[in-house]
Length: 545
Image 1 (cartoon, rainbow, N blue to C red):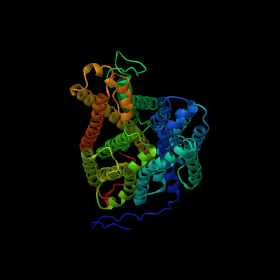
Image 2: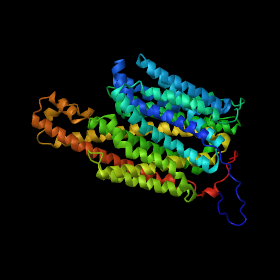
Image 3: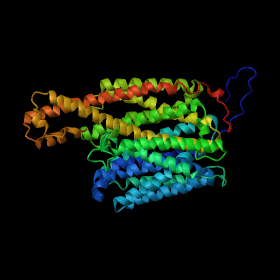
Image 4: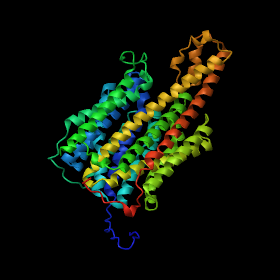
């Protein structure tokens, strides 16, 4: 296939088309990681029952996985460059299989947590390996399609995990879910023998100082953001493990994490000036357009995480419905992301990344504003489905687009560094999006509910003193009634409190979507700095910056 060029412009070299067989294994590797992540929330109820532990302890499996990936992904990228991508890819896929065996056979929650530590450590190498192996095996339009398939694999995994995992968890148990991840790991391992890659460079040295700095920064940031709601946004709550002069450890962790992150960048730049091999080559972020791509990726992943937290929380906690009901409600969104992430590459021949990004962020902004007006207690209404589909189109296009900008701008030997930046950005953005949205919704709900009951003539202050309004959260009507039945409230007063909470919950949800719309609108700034080139004008990436 050739592109029309202006007179005097040399024709591009003919593009070698390669078999898609190796990509099947890479696609399934992304499915393996994403399915494992999506299966963990579905398995929490079963783990609580099997191991006789509280939900907060069982949810540690989710936390340790995310921390392991984000903290180790940059070090994992350097290991891949040193050992060789194909070899280390096979090793960590085998380790992922071991983690699935631990989940299936775990006798205590500690074994399940250990299994997810192994899974997270493996994923920390699989994430950059996928990018490096795509760069090794594909070029041009095939590479763009391959990159897009990773985004669609994430959405496909979310759909299948909810449907298959929800069905198994309801009728069989939570352990059989991880037979699927075990089977996927075996298939990916066998397909890895179709991949080709360099043998690696034993001369590459891993910067241990940078590894410690970025690892500690990510751990502190993730723990801080994830616990803002539970430990307190400013003052330490009773649930906080300790306090720092009365302050919650969560914001302290966030500040320390930011400082260590800055120290990592300063150390890495110093190493690069001295001509030493850095943990991650910051040259992949040398241009403003590449930094803009990272900012845009962070924003869209954080918004996706916020929506993925808000909708299931409202459906399962507030409405008391099952994970299977949640999967059906989220199906339009997940299917749209899946299709858009795959098909968006067809538009690369006609529109620049900048134009696609600006249109996509405009679409996500409009979708979120629309949802803030039309959302009700019924998620199956046509207006709500339209809003989720529109947001899914924008989200799927953006995740694939900004990732492709980074991959195409970097030379092949730095593809692992691009993968590590992608992994760090996405995992940190997911934690921040979930935590910030959770804290925002609970804070707005608590303030709105407190003010409404204070102004209500049938709810006297002495009655409200018997209810801990500081702990108002998203709860079902039955749970709220049970809370008020422990007080001296009459039936009429309980009905009034439930009605107020219903109204405030919906109002909070609408405000939450409006806040996300504002963030989406602000994302036009980094999106406007993305490249303006057409596909035939893509510069040939060079190691020299």
